[in-house]
Image (cartoon, rainbow, N blue to C red; front, side, top):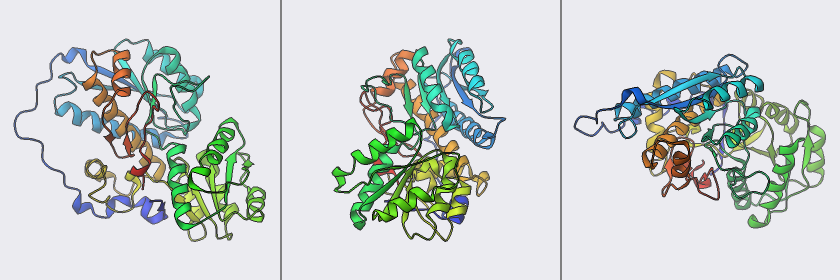
Length: 386
């Protein structure tokens, strides 16, 4: 179900139902002894720890450190200890590629996690593909399709809330509420062009009339022209795609129209929630970690979210939405890699890649349910979004 976000709920998400977050104690007995400590499994993490997105990078780093501590306390991965190797990108493309090269050249580094800056996700993906090292993206909206001509993905996976699963959630809800036609707003760049095709392509499946997409400049805070064009054409709801920084401009432009504005979770920020408060009907397909209240016990991700919140209770009310998603995605990335290493035939990059791709069951994390496959390297189950 699409979740209607409110600023107060998003910022103080931890405070509701905290008493319910107790998790079962570890199984009785002594955890397996970790052997070969000198041959720890290294995971490289490329985050902005000093630039404009440093708060997200710091949240990601702290979350992964806690995840690694849990895995190692349970005996590591096949009795080998996990170790995170953080690298500060400073939010710079040049620094990102330099740090990535340093990590790739270390044969003990079996995989990469990152980045928190969505603008850098495509470059890191291309680098990982060229250098044949598994990468778990924690930001970005691009579909990761191994069979796609000219942009095939072999080594890159994702735990970020992608565009396609979000579209399915939105369109299912639009269909249920009989909101039709739908007006798309997309960023004026190559990713926006691709997004407009996806937005139009899913329309017939849900019996929705998708109007021609209107484009907006990502550095333009005024998108009223596109909004008004769609309103004149009869749009009963708007769905938007663009970088996170464009969200505030969209919210200001849609004020007082009374229309729903649906955006992927990757566009949600504290600034957007503030701009939308009381005047915009803002929807998103929310990862379970963003639930304002306790996740229902029947939800497949309920235990993971409860454990995450319990182990991060000292951060209650301190994370912004974007910091929370960076922390949650990094947490899931680490656990997805740990599961892959446990199933891998050997401790090699190729073995890890194959193990992640060949998983025979969903990984239920805090960002949703994921089952990467040879056809989709995200494998996010839309039904696990809220």
